[in-house]
Image 1 (cartoon, rainbow, N blue to C red):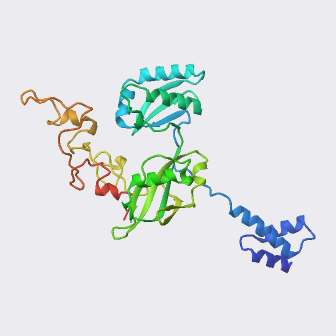
Image 2: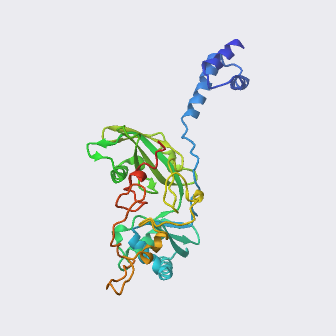
Length: 333
C-alpha cells in the first residue's frame, strides 16, 4: 500500500481514490504502472480547450445582422415596409419558405428579424437585394451574419508605438483579417487600443467579438499567440466593460446613465438642455430664420457650427472617440 501511496504523491494532481480505483480494476498492475496511467489521464484532461463563460446573452438567432454606414441605414429604415416586402419577394423567388418579419436599426447595423433561422442562401439573397437598392452605397455594406452572443477578449504585450507609428484600431483590424487565427472571428465593434499607463509604451488591445452560446470561436483563440510585427501577443478572456462608464444623460464619466442624478438631459453636440437627436430643432444656427434669410439645416447635412466637448473642452462631440477621456475609458487608472 505504501508503494501506491507514493504513486499518488508522484503526481500531485491525482488523489488516493483514483489510485485505488485503478488498482481495483487492474489487480496485477504494479505501483509504477498505476502512476503512469494516472499521469496519462491527467495530461489528456489538461489539454482540453478552455471553458469560456459567455458574458452576455445575444439577440435571437432568428435575427440577421447587417453592418453598414449610417447613411445606408437611414435610407433603408425610412422605407422599411417596402424593403421587407421586396426581401420576402426575393426569398420567395429563390424557393425559400423563410419570411422576414420586420427591420430595425441599432448603432451602425440593420437587423432583420425572420420567422425562423436563415441559411447561407437566404443571407446571399438578402445581401444581393440590399446592395441593389437605389442610392445605397454597396461598398459600405459589410457581410451579413446571423446573430450571436457578444464575448470580450484582450491581447497584451504590444508596444503602443511600432514601425508604423502609434497603433490604431484600423491597423489592428487589418492585422486580424490577415491572420488565420481570426479567420472565422466576427468583430462586434472596432478594437480599442489602450496604453497600460500614461508613462508606459506598452498597450492592451480590447476586442468585442460575436460568438455562439457555446463559445466555439473563442475556444479556438483564447490563450493562443500571434504576431503584430515583431511582438508576440497572447489572447485572454476578459470581463464586459472593464473601464469607466460614461453617462448618456449628462455625459459625465465615472457612472452609468441609470445612476445619473441630473433631471436635465444634455445634448452631446452643444451641451444645451435638450436631447441630442433634437439638436437641429433647438439650436438657433440650425433652425430656420426668415429675418436672417437662413434656411433650416437638413437632417442629411452636418451642423454648420463647431461642437464643444464639456469634458476636455476640445472641438468635438462629448461622445466622440477622439476625446482624450474616451481614449482612456477602458483603464480605471
